[in-house]
Length: 411
Image 1 (cartoon, rainbow, N blue to C red):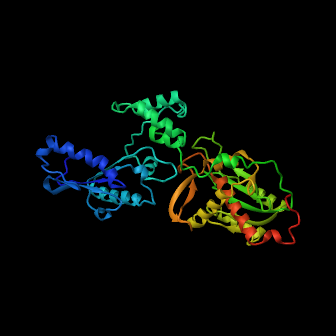
Image 2 (tube, helix red, strand yellow):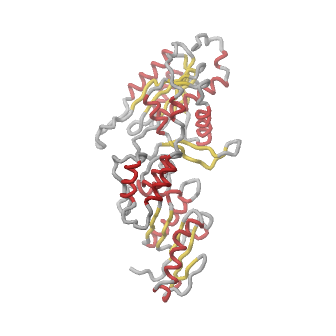
Image 3 (cartoon, rainbow, N blue to C red):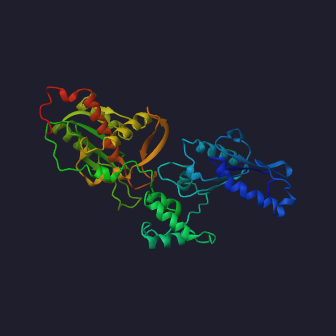
């Protein structure tokens, strides 16, 4: 049904992005049959019959938000995240659309899976009244293989006869040399992590060595996990040597059907915690409490509230500094680990989530997450390693290694 008084807001993060739509729309009106209904198009807005309008809205033009919009094209929503403020823009516009019975339309390249962008939220939403058009190439085609890449481009650009696929191939091949994930997202239309990987896995893998922490050594523990969906784990760090190993890990088996119930065996986690406390001199155990508050309280009662500490990872700035320290300390003379496949996999899965917080040098801090909320690629052991490493640093800063009671070093 034609709206008597339409209000359309062409929306993007910047004016340059709104131009993708607006600069194409104006000549369509000026040089086509619509010029009889719309005699004039302006630089910033277009006046429609019956006092309707087509406006341009960016992140810096929020005074236009909250209006009774009837249609909102939102461009490049894969770049709309919390830190830019554009997620709030989208939410405000949709409230206006819902009141008017209007529609929003999003256009975007494949999004970075760690950014929590507007495009990602829409694509992963459970709502049934969203039409999604996201053609994906065959899963068995490998983007870094040139012959497969040609097939992928042919599939995802199907119908776009104006696209020069030789030019696409040339750009993709060059980008693959430095960031294959980004190339696959932008040209292959696949949602994969690229430059957002939090840690250099090759660097971390190189720190693996064959070593066993002697019984009685001063250690720290990191604990993080979920009861049902994500993995749960314990990572132990020898304070003197900086050597890390996995003391326990529980992860939902991938072969289980989605409708099959599964839960982390709490008694096994209790046993693993008891084993570490029995074998080593535990200085601190840093635990992320969500879903495990009762267990953390119980461990605190058993082993001492001065040893078992609730360390909330949702304290963003503190967490960001702990992640920065962990990444900086990935050096042979500082850090080593057991090479456990599970630990390597989780560290490699972690993707970076930029924040708008800065460190003392003015650089932006970041957090880590899975590729997406529903991703099967878990990162919990990476978080355990970071918490254990943070506890180790606190132990050294507190002078714990100088205590006379610590007599059995790891050397």
